[in-house]
Image (cartoon, rainbow over all chains, first blue to last red; front, side, top):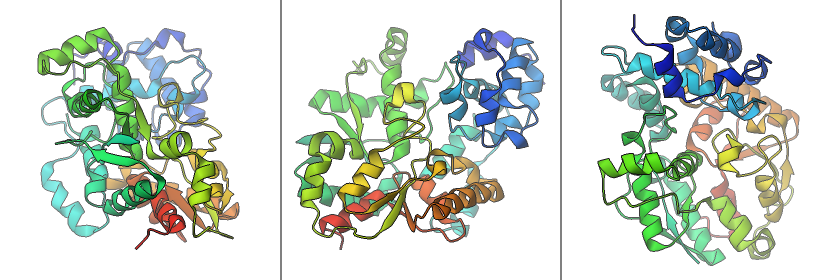
Length: 129
Length: 256
């Protein structure tokens, strides 16, 4: 899938993964960890082991809510959400890997009159490179 | 008191009432929100990738404009507050300043602007005591829960809005208006955010948990500062949620 190296992801996320002591507090704080095939603390461990492809293929990229609970509660300042974001960016920046297209928007707007612009902008930023 | 004001995309459209109420309340409370010129959408989410620069430029332009006017920059939308404040922090970095200059060399900006939320204006510049004095229709007997969500609080090292696990600013605000502030454990948990576009069931489930928790603790109504929280939480069963500005306008007697 990719020639993405661990160093590229590491730089893109700019986190200190070596500080992680695998306490699991990030995953315990994550409101959607039970739906992720790779939970936040495992995300950090896999990046340490350079298993970048696994990260890029995980459903975690689309489950993460960017609620920053993992970042807030990490006792070591590791910032797991930034690694998830870096992996998501590494995917959506590839040609044909966007997870939303402009053509979908009219459908969303027509179906709900109370849909806030903030939602469309957020989703575009998160799902499209 | 005059502040630079950044309404943001949703307050100009779907959440227009928040903007209207806030301006009216500001007038009563003796401060002015001066909308900055030609602002652009902040992007609604903070770009976390370390190489993101272009996606931060609209926020930097807004921050720069406030600096030129020598004013603090006020927002109402929790997402705008979050994005502007974090990007402002990024701009204290010399490397970032240099890179931004290569995009637009008129942006002589180093993070000087103070980004403040409307609620902080009430707290620090107006004062909750004075707010209480100005209240003409106290919200007596109303049991209201403040739903904070994520964007105002986390990460607290940068947002510094309130204690991220036990915030009190909205509760103090509610008490000043004469309401009973109902604290509930899930008031700082995520509503599902942007996943409500494509994973509606999940966001509905999360919203249900928040509302259920608020009701169990005695809240009859919730208030929020975030249009996306309002949209998501309003979809929960038995939900009643308003922008905090609506209750403020009611209490100050300026709600039409």
